[in-house]
Image 1 (spheres, rainbow, N blue to C red):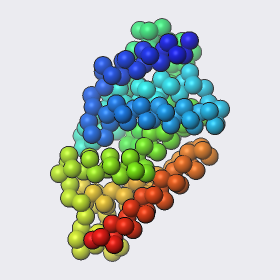
Image 2: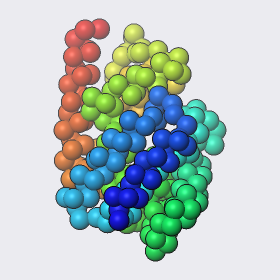
Image 3: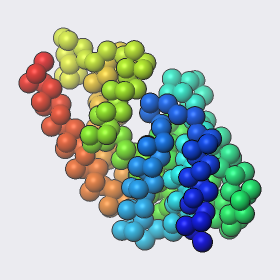
Length: 208
């Protein structure tokens, strides 16, 4: 049953998602892949996790939009309309809605179920590691943000400002994400990816 719905979820997100450099289809598919992996380890309900992972970004305001924090709520309502239209079991709807709302970093809603924790973890893991570095640079380039502050590239004696410097975003957000993971499996993976990012910063320091 879930396999049939998964094809419909994939078709819907391909048709409906407004893509940007931070949130493209490949991001969605990576989050789905990671969420499946975490679910298998942690024993979560895929009936909730898969729709949540596929549809978590079915609506997303631009990263610098003043109402950015409302994106996940709008996405959750849009997702439920779609799930209703394909006859997805209503018994899962409210859990899926909470999963989508709470995935967002900017919304700052605490995930109350294992399934919501897993989708949040999977989404945040995609901001770490090699892919996290690439996405960070992509988005900063789109926003016309410089790479680093030449006088203090790694924020040793100043407050980081990621609206001006790309590398500052590591200190504002990325290096702190490991501490926000909910599940044990995600914590292990986040640690690996964070270590990689610190190695990248160390190498960058040698070069600049």
